[in-house]
Image (cartoon, rainbow, N blue to C red; front, top):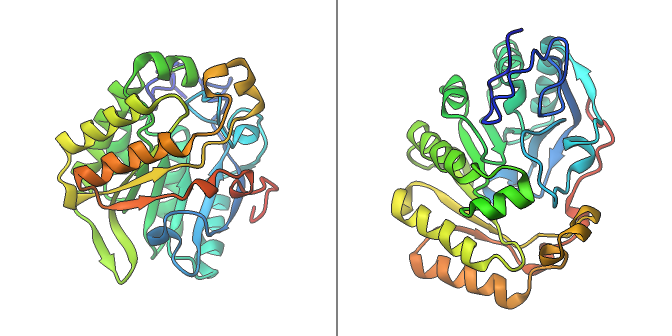
Length: 290
């Protein structure tokens, strides 16, 4: 395998003989494949989203709730054929979609598995937003619903908390590419079948940056062509103890200020209740379904 250039890290590692920045080799590793009921209502529906959590990550967020798989190495290695069987088992459970969480660093292998499984339900790409346009184009025609984060505008914040000072540069381009591929929302009743949902997690002490995220979306994407998912579920991790500014929950005032601005700008989508800031919303990475 040539040096890896799948994500903005461009680490250039030959992952057949070593792990890349993402912590992964060339073989797919996943930590859970099961129905998930805690996504946006139009994704989870009544039957759940068939969610596959892939191990490793191209970001380095200090507040990551999935740290045991993003950096901890938990997971089972799977061939493309085995992953295709995982997809088929999930679809047989009656899920509304296949939800691929942090799949970027396994792009070629996952696309191969999808070609084998040939799912008949929508495919969701659930990502931190830190993507290369060139890699996203490999997914064109396969992804039905893009579900990226837009975490920051500030390079200082993204550098400090996600080890990615170029986060906004990359994520903003990526989201525009995702929108190019899925430029309108396609519904079947209350379920989204095609489209783009942009998530933003409000961080403590970062209200001005959250407002800048909203301004970017307001300027660059037609309001009726995507959904905004405003999240309040920020929960400090033990790693956050070294970052005093975010080692607390988001206040009602902070979240309400961002939510009010989103309403003023006329976004459609979802806004979480502050009671969502609970660890129980993170599933157990117990290798279920693998």
